[in-house]
Length: 201
Image (spheres, rainbow, N blue to C red):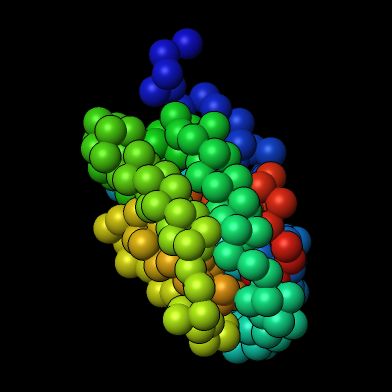
């Protein structure tokens, strides 16, 4: 099977029944009565998956979880936060090929661009900011809960640009991916759990 085969990405989608809820406190939740938004492969028109459209209560719950997690996360020494961020980078590397295929399917970019540019750069951002967390001192004060809004054109890379520095400086994050390109963000949620990031962070 070729490294760029969609089989692994499709198996991951099937394992989730091609349906995603909201991810709060390291747990997938499926609130009743929510609208669903499709993720459509722009090259084929195929519906890849569907995701819950969060409503204000879901956002409030996510912010509350992030606020609860903030005191413990922000009080960790920088080198302890760095361990978590290094773990995220390593797990992104572990899933590099699948993320590249998933991003290509969801966004319509060529596999060459996702495999050779977007995903490696996202990984490098987490490694880079793990280093910043390690050397950060009292001059870098966390601000609290950070909202990160991601556009459709660089789904995982823009996520890395926003999430990595926020975590490194001791903030917690509520992420809002683009409605049409959410799949790499949902895979990233799995990676956070694999990396042992505390719930709510």
